[in-house]
Image (tube, rainbow, N blue to C red):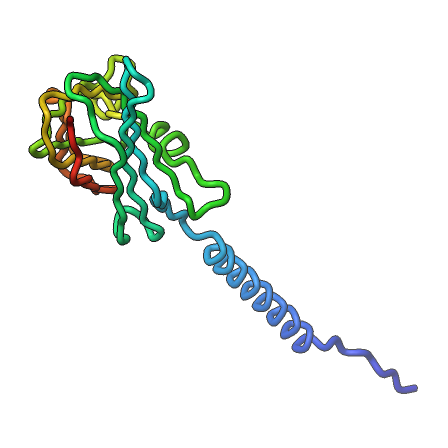
Length: 205
C-alpha cells in the first residue's frame, strides 16, 4: 500500500511573512513622514496694523482735542499711508495722549494695542520726535513697563509751548536690542519698526 505524505510549503510561507513585514515597515515609515509634514513648526507672524490714531485731550478743557490718524489698508509697516491732522494745540496747555492701534481688515477690528503690544510690552518701545514744534512730553508714572525697566510710552502727557508749526513722529520698535527713556521722547537701537509715521503741519496756536 502506497502512502502519500503531505509536505509543508515552507518557501511560500516564508515569502508571505517577509512580504508582510516589509509592507508594515513601509506603512510605518510613510506614516512617520506624513506626521512630520502635517505638523510643521509654527510660524509666529507679526500682527498687521492698518490704523493708528493719536488723540490729544486738553486736561483742563476736554473739548480742546487734537487728533492725528494714519491709515494703510495693506499695513502701516510697508503699505501706502494716508495721514490726517485735525485741530491745533493751545499754547501753554497740557494734553493727555490716547493711542488706538488696530487692524481694520478684521471684522470687528482687532485691537492690536491691547491684545498684542501691551501684553508683549517687553518686546516693544515707542519712540517720539518733534521737529520745529514746541511740544514736550513725559512718560507717565503709571505708564506700562517696557523693555529693561523703561516705560513703554503708551501713556504720556504733553505740554504745548509757544506758537509754532512742525512735524510730530511716532515709531513703534519691535524687539529692540536696547532702549533709553532718559529723554522722554525715547531712543532705541536694533530691532525692527512695526511702523514709523510722521504727521506734518501740526500747529500750536
